[in-house]
Image (tube, rainbow, N blue to C red; front, side):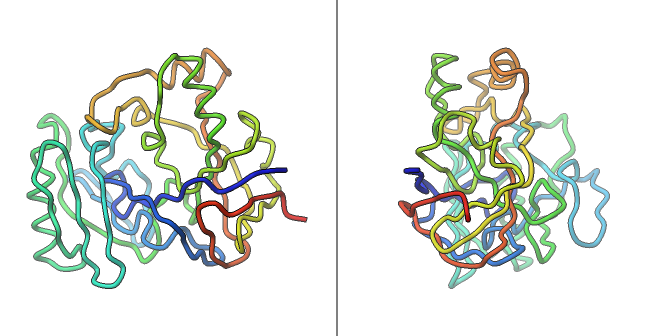
Length: 249
């Protein structure tokens, strides 16, 4: 089959930066550790206990400049470092009142004054994934290349905010996996559904500015605006970049 895990990413604060990992240990029924662990509730949010829909949070679809944030979380110390080309780096403790205040002051200059402003950095004891179940997003390197070639543009990987990138599949073959299980390293995941995409994918993550209309390109070329699939972990274990991947028996 020749599939392999090419890249692993997590996003400690939903819509506020990503980091690449060499490996990850996944737990049955859970998303990546510290993926979307925090989210930024805006002043118009109506939050319920536990998981909340993305409309309650500031995100790249509404504020493109957020897409240029990079993150590095230290699991041992609980310190998170954020960088952005327009701001000085910030290292803070997101689970402390002082750290939350530092973060809100840091991110404020990136916000459009005409939109609901960030008010609280929140956590829910689970990942604030875009799905109401704790999902792991699986994306296909070949699909990204195919779309980029169609547009005539190097799309990169960051704009898609994915977790696990697979190489060796045919373009769009990931959609054929829905309902099946995939083994990646020691981890098994069940592919649940396609990922519908939003305007955040139109943004160049180096600059935080819109550079290409990915949604029109997907619709015109393929008749949909989906990219990647959501999965749930059905068998706990470790996965490393470079591990083989295959359809589970």
